[in-house]
Amino acid sequence: MGAKRRKAQNILLLVSSYIFYGLWDWRFLSLLFLSSIIDYFAGRAIEASQKNNIRKLYLWGSIFWNVGVLIAFKYFNFFIDSFSSLLSLDIPENGYTFWNVIIPVGLSFYTFQTISYTVDVYRKKIKPTRNFVEFFCFVSFFPQLVAGPIEKAGKLLPQFKKERKFNLQTSKEGLRQILWGLFKKILVADKLGIAVTMVFSNPDTYGSLTLAFAAVLFSFQMYCDFSGYTDIAIGTAKLFGFELSKNFDIPYLAKSITEFWKRWHITLTRWFTDYVYIPFVKTSNKITTLVRATGLLLTMFLVGMWHGANWTYIAFGCFNGILLGIERIPFFKRKGTLMKKLQNTPRIIALIYFFCLTSISSILFRSQDIEQALYILKRIFSFTLDTHISSLIGIKLFYLLILIIAELATRNLDFPLQKLELKFPKLARWALYYTLIFFIIRYAEPKEVFIYFQF
Image (cartoon, rainbow, N blue to C red; front, top):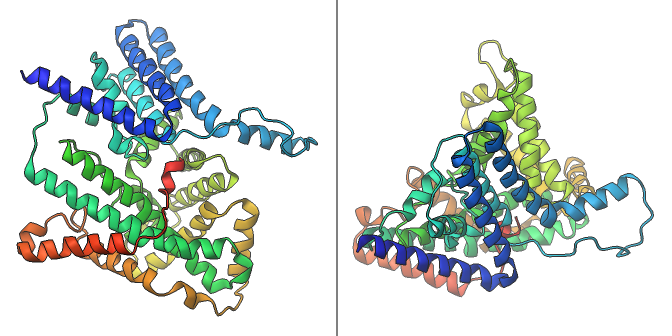
C-alpha cells in the first residue's frame, strides 16, 4: 500500500509540475521532457558501461545536450552579434534573424540540475535511479523549477522515494516562510525597484550620491527579490513534505567578497565550485596561488555568462573573479591573505570595503550595457552634486528597515518567522500574520516578475 501511495503522490506532483510550467508556455514542455529523458538514459548507460571511454562518451553526450540547449536559447544571437561587431560587418538592423525565440523560463536552473546528476553518476557519488517518474519529478519539481535552489540529485531525488505524510508543524513553518518571502518580494524588492528604475533609466539627471545610493538599493532589491522567491519555494516544498537547500545566509553581513559568495546563491556557488573550479584546479600539477586565481576568474566568468547573454553580466562575473583572486593573494606576512585580514578587521571597516565593491558590481549587473555602466561609474567618481537623493527616501525604505532589523535579530534562524511559536503567544502571532498579509495586499505595487526568472 505504501509503494502505491508514494507512486500516486509522485505522479500527481509530476502532472502538477508540468501543468505549472505549461501555463507559462506549453511549447517548452517538450524541451523539459527531452532534457529529462536524455539524462535519465545517460545515467543508466553510464552505470551499465564497463569501459571508461564509453562512460565518458555518455557523460559528454549529456553535457553537450544541456550546454547546447543553453547556447541555442540564451547565447546564440549574442555570439553572432558579437562576432559581427568584432569583424565590423555591415549588417542592417533587423536584416537577419538566425534564431528568434524567447528564453524558456528556468532553463539555466534545470539544465544545471540535470548536468550535476550525470556527473555525479559518472563520479560514482550516486546510483542512477531506475524509476522514470521519480527522475522526471526531480527535474521538474515545480517549487524550485524556475529559479532554484539548484538541487543535487543526492539530496532531492531520494525524497521522491519516500512516502510523504501531512505534517502540521512542517506545514505551518512552510506557510510562515512563504509569508516572509512574499513580504521580501512585494513590500521590499518591488518598492525598491521603483526607485532603482527611476535612477538607472535616466542617470544623467542624478548626481554622485543618488547614483551610489541607487546602486546600494539595487543590491538589496536583488537580494529581497531572489531570496524572497527562495523562501516561497522552500516553504511550498515543505507543504508537500520536501526539504530544499538553504540558498541565502544574510549575505550583506559578509566582510569580504569571498565570504559574500559563500552566503549568496549558495547552491549556484556550490555547483560551480564542484563542477568547474575544483576540476580546473586539479588539472594542475602544482596548485599555486596563480592557479587558484585563474580558476576563480574562469569560474566567475562562467557565473557571469550563466546570468545572461550580455557584456554587463560578463563584466560582473570577471570583476568578482578578479576580486576573489586578489583576496587570496598573500599580501600580508603575518595576517596572510586579504581575505583573512578582513576577517580580523572591525566590522564597520570591512562593511565599507564590501559595500563599495558590491555597489560597483551591482551597477555592472543592473546597467543596460557597458556604456551605461561606465557612464554611471564616471558620474559617481566625478562627485557630481545633486538634490534628488531625498526622492529615494521614504516609505520604500521603511520596509527595508523592518527587514534588516528582523533578519539581524534572528540571524541564527533560517528566516525571521521560523520560531514564533516559542516566543510569542497565539494572539500576538496571528496579529502579526494578518498585519503582514494586509500590508502585502494593500500596498503591493504593479505586478513585477522575479528578476531571476529571466535566467
